[in-house]
Length: 306
Ligand SMILES: N[C@@H](CC(=O)c1ccccc1NC=O)C(=O)O
Image 1 (cartoon, rainbow, N blue to C red):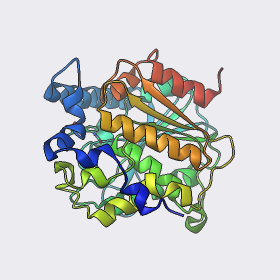
Image 2: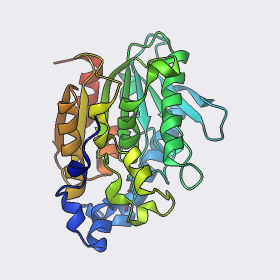
Image 3: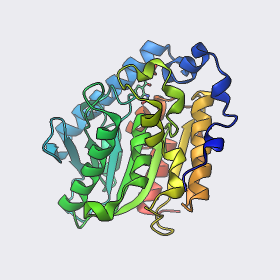
Image 4: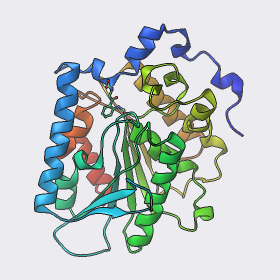
């Protein structure tokens, strides 16, 4: 059963916030500590573009591979030096509130991960207002099915999403893969600074290009459907890592903590990490660095080091 309406309509703190406060809570760039909002956003996209350029110049890659017939339904793959298809695949879904960002500026982790022997897949999807949230969720599901079919010998898919991308990643736990004829070999999920209950953003500026009705928001809120989902945990081998940045807003902390609790209730093996000393953007751009705590967590999860 889905979460009862009383639980959804309960005492969530955002319901008592002014419009202005809600807007602030859901504007990650207003919570950065080392840079101003605009500089943080600029740096985030610069580091991503530069990391992507570098990966394209120095790694074997497949770029703009269509996973569907629609415009923008393409993905990029970056490979380690040793040629093999029996590789772990790290699949990244970029953020940008479903209305900004692109795979062309999101291969942050391609360097550190390919050096260690994992391939990195960066998925493109159709941003709002052109794409609707339902379409994006379907696109990401099709991209994962495509990757599984294209690399059937993969040693596991490690799905990672940031912010809006973490929402899309979490929605994948609700997909009926049997119906789609292929089940991705999912080995772990990294959910970075995500939002899992979309109702609070319906009345913020985030929703201007999205046009989410309260019904759209509820249908696309993994927080309220996970416990009822038919896609049950694939056994103890698929951990869910829910990670939020120390300097993310209180609402982002609440969203991650409550989704972690829901994952546990639904029977997933989940962990929760409040990643010290990073904001919403540093959390991802530091994945360009091999010695960054989150890069190390990802590598340990993929390569099972203790
Ligand atoms: N306008 C937003 C931008 C934003 O939220 C964002 C930007 C890049 C990557 C992820 C983001 N957040 C969620 O997807 C802000 O004020 O931070």
